[in-house]
Amino acid sequence: MYLQHFQLKEMPFSITPDTAFFMNRGGYRDALNVLKVALDMGEGFLKVTGEVGTGKTLLCRSLINNLSDEYVTAYVPNPYLTPEGLFLTIADELGIRYTPNIRQHALLKRITWTLLKMRKEGKRVVLCLDEAQAIPIQTLETLRLLTNLETDKRKLIQVILFGQPELDELLSEPSIRQLRQRITFAYKLSPLNRESMKRYIDHRLSVAGYMDGDLFDEEALELLYVASQGIPRLVNILAHKAMIVAYGIGDLMITRKHMRVSIEDTEDARRWHEKSVRKRDRILRWAYGAFGTLAIAGVIAFATNSADVMALIK
Ligand SMILES: Nc1ncnc2c1ncn2[C@@H]1O[C@H](COP(=O)(O)OP(=O)(O)O)[C@@H](O)[C@H]1O
Ligand SMILES: [Mg+2]
Image 1 (tube, rainbow, N blue to C red):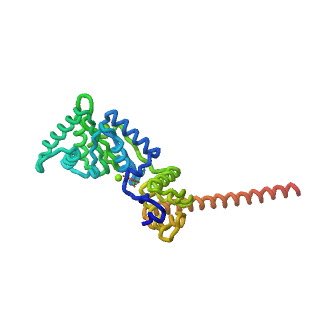
Image 2 (image 1 turned 120 degrees about the vertical axis):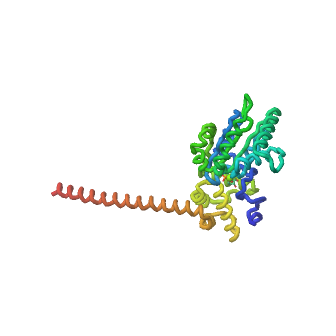
């Protein structure tokens, strides 16, 4: 589309979590380190939460790519599964063969056997569950039982839950109290701040092959930050649309004009933007009000003083 126009090798702001674009920003570095250390320490349950679009899936994929050969990982992208469905998925991920009508009990036995075999080979097995806020309670409970499997030294499987903040609500259910108590390591991903959003944009553009300096001017970036609240997915959507707008009219730099159109066209962003405009108007109204009151008070004080002075002169 606009690749040639902006001299790019690939789309810089696609919304798929592509690890080639991974930026090891502050919060991310911390999260990756926390996860790696906790896995090395043999923790059974870890948790990463963050609002929609803050980069949980990308973090999960980057972690999987970053782990040493000692680790065998199983990735479950959509854990809206029955306990049986979860066992089948884990078996598939670990390359375990089974007949279509296998009983749950028999499947669990095979999984346990495979985990023990992997342990003997010096491997550590990590199960990553994305969108974990959607796991049915019963399946979560089964998961806990699975992590009960341990040798005298270590867990046979370690689990990382990646989920939206609703995951915490789910975990506060009394019926899974035991599981909650076992989550000793948790990390919360936050959105980008202004400065890291700018680095994020530069980073993605440079990975995509852009070499022409700043593509977005300061005003466009400020609008982008307010409208996206620093949420990477929203930043990508807005930046991409603004580039389409600029391309459509032959402009080579993204300014306020292009960004406004992009925001208008994006419901989530419009909401933040309107909210911030309302907040600004409220502050302005308040400031005018305060200024007005001060001015009136000043006039009264002046008049009173003048009257006093006049009285003295007289
Ligand atoms: N640290 C990062 N570096 C590069 N891109 C990121 C980063 N964090 C998030 N993104 C991008 O933001 C978008 C949303 O990330 P994603 O992992 O899908 O969010 P979530 O799973 O939390 O909804 C993806 O395009 C992803 O590539
Ligand atoms: Mg995700």
